[in-house]
Every structure is written in structure tokens, then in C-alpha cells.
Length: 215
Image 1 (cartoon, rainbow, N blue to C red):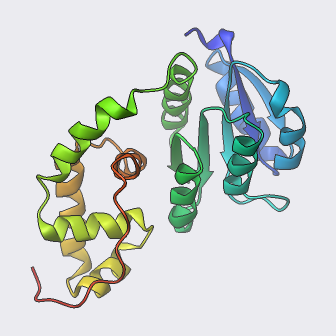
Image 2: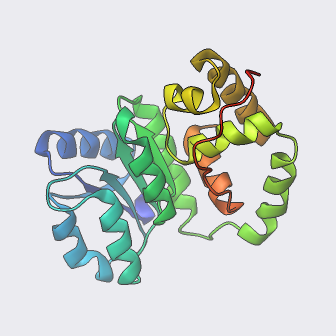
Image 3: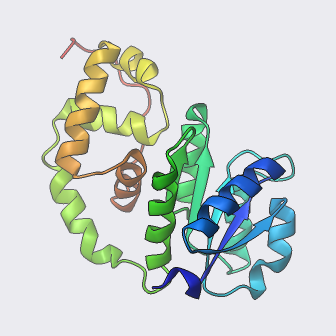
């Protein structure tokens, strides 16, 4: 899909951020429209067609998660990317459960956002066949060790490496090694993609694990 055939809607309460993102995406050939708040966007969302959404996660009037929930209720949900601070990964996971396609952690490289927007645009043509992809995801999950599945559950729950390490009685460095192995085995190109696959496979976040010998 050509970038001029759809509109990228930017929702952020900070004017400087809106202008910066709008300038970047406009220079890349996208048609852009900015909205100063989630509430303002909701008033026009039901009338919009062929658009994707880039929204901040934390906003004073309404969070990005709540925005996606409201869009879903209004049957106006569009492919969405949420922009989040490093400490907001749990909220970002909730946003994906609410329908977000991807999330990007600040600070991010410009080309990361542009690539995410282009990826979101493909959703305007056709949603991926989830039924077809789930068996492949389950097959990849079968390749994980028990410890790697425990670490993945912690990641899906939005827990920090230190918290996962404490719950499993292993070192944070060991958690990092497990996460790298998980990314490879699951063929995930990003944390957001890994979380999305886990959600498609309906992998439930586990409660804090009983301490066991270090592995």
C-alpha cells in the first residue's frame, strides 16, 4: 500500500512530540494528522477510514490502553502502535491485549518508528491469519526449556529482568541469556513481536515461581 493512500494519526498530549513525529513521517511520504488528546481523537475516530494510529501510552486525559479499549467498543479500532517509556512495559503488554499491533520503547531510532508504521499499514489490507500462525507458534514454544517458559511468562507479565530473576532465584544475567535464547527459538525480531506471539498462543503469565535450584 502506498504511504499516501492512508493517514497516520498521531495522538500525544505534548505539542513538541506531535510536531516532531508529524515532521518525521511527513518527510517519509506519509499523510499525517495530529490529535492533542485521546478524547479529541475518539470524537472523530468512527468516521475515519484507511488509517493507522501512533499513540503515547501515558496521557493526562486517557491512557493509550483505555483509548484502544474505547476504539474497540466503538468498533473503530485501527492498526495501532503505542509509544512507551522503558518502565511502562506492563502497560504496553496491556495495550497489545487491547488490540495494539506493536509498541516502541523510548528513546527510539527514527527508522524504527517508520518501519513500525509501514508494518501497521499492511494491516489495512488484511489481518494476518491467526488460526494459521498459532500452530507454528505452539511448535516454537515446544522448543523452549521449562526455565525459558518461566522466563517468557515473566516477560509477558511485563516483569523486569531483576524481578524475574528474584522470582526464579537466578541471576539477572542468566535471565538475559534465557531471553536471548527465547527470542531466537521463537523467531521474534522484537520484544513486541515476542509478546504478540505469546498472546496469540494464549500463554498465560505465571504467578511468581516457587524458588528452585539455580539453572
